Length: 175
Ligand code: SF4
Ligand code: SF4
Image (tube, rainbow, N blue to C red; front, side, top):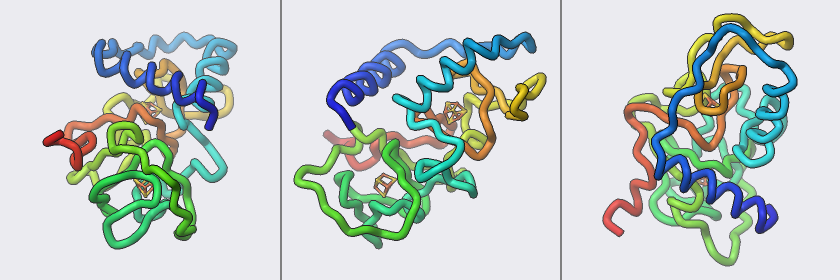
């Protein structure tokens, strides 16, 4: 990841934390060109994916399926205690553990690590910003994301996941 990309993500996270976001309503009237630009942005800085290593075909995005996990309760890239059953973060990548430590781990805040102890999973279908779209888009995406203002597939996910049970950076609560 380039420094500029990291800076852009930090900026997005800071803005969303400092200014509670107003949902972007699904009006039922869509602009495909604008939505494509937004989806490209969500893909490049928001970790949104509909295929490839950042996509979970089961739509759960849990640490237990991430190749950076170190079972039973740690991670090669994120600090602190990690929950395989409830946790995830924005650098989730599918696969068997690769056991490749980095020099310095990201903190739970930097990686946007969070846990969902009730939902037991992440992904658009479990996200507070998700709803069924009034109409699917031309490619058949049935969901509407009111954070980005675009159609999404229910099994996708991004760094702005939300939910009533979401615990952000539980390992750093006391710091
Ligand atoms: S904390 Fe992030 S990088 Fe580590 S195992 Fe969980 S999803 Fe993967
Ligand atoms: S519905 Fe939630 S997880 Fe899906 S793209 Fe929108 S904010 Fe991200």
